[in-house]
Image 1 (cartoon, rainbow, N blue to C red):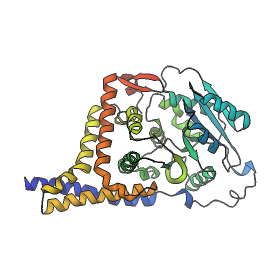
Image 2 (image 1 turned 60 degrees about the vertical axis):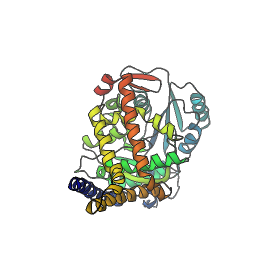
Image 3 (image 1 turned 135 degrees about the vertical axis):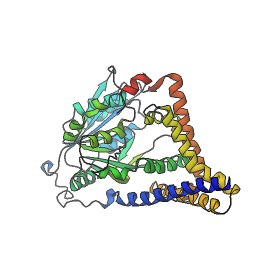
Image 4 (image 1 turned 180 degrees about the vertical axis):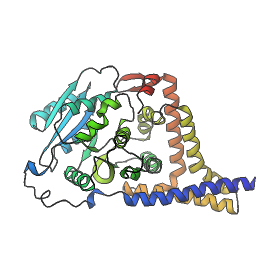
Length: 392
């Protein structure tokens, strides 16, 4: 039995060693927006639209009256000579529509489209973004959400970076605001898992099939968006933001990723309970609605993040050394994630708790989706069979 545990923990430690090296290399490869060098013409504030491409910021909002005003204010305060904001009010029952209409009357950059009914065969968010696109005129498009806030220079820096790297698509790792201890435990673990699972730096390698997309900010050339099939290809895709990146790569286009820092901020969900409830529709969807994949995610998370902590008091010799290695390396990764978020690296010691929360999010999403036979999103129910046919 001792040799079994030594071998198992040795494999886990070796896996973490490979992952740590890959993560360190990948994090180094991801550029930061605050390091982007702008051409003198772009920073001269000359106000000449001909020196910059036209950009359309697109978002869809449903009952976002609480967070929308701050987001909208930031969208309309861009330090960029030629852009527009296309907002879709997706069947809102609160003050979202009136907030948008009032802002449009005060600022001609903003165009508002009101959607009163959802066509068959569409999820609300993809339909909203498709509608916004159809009313846009930009050479570049920014896909975002109604609860995100931009710093004024974000269009200048992202356009400059995309054009310097010859990218057709650029997504940003944004700053996630966290206020409670539960949010910080869950989000620092989730952020690290995102990096380890997707390895987003591979998206910039044309030879790699890796892809990434983040809903808070995706910049894409209009021609590239049309070539990938627009959101019509994602009409029934729950994780449409990530799948934009996939369709870009499948279309043979160039994709990239950068760290936004605080240039793009979002407070995802308020409190741990809302994070868990808010991801119910998403987590099982990321498996393609395959229960065995969800089981594999649960087993893998427990094996890699929880087992070494449980084993340390009961093993000795090389087994204990391997267990410690399998604890320290992922803790270093989570500490780095916490620092990127502007939080204390000490949240790394909460890693087993973060892993158990993550496991519960997967289990809960799977059970709820299977029990009700689908998901409920933006007030509409969608059956699993219909969702499976829409998976990209």
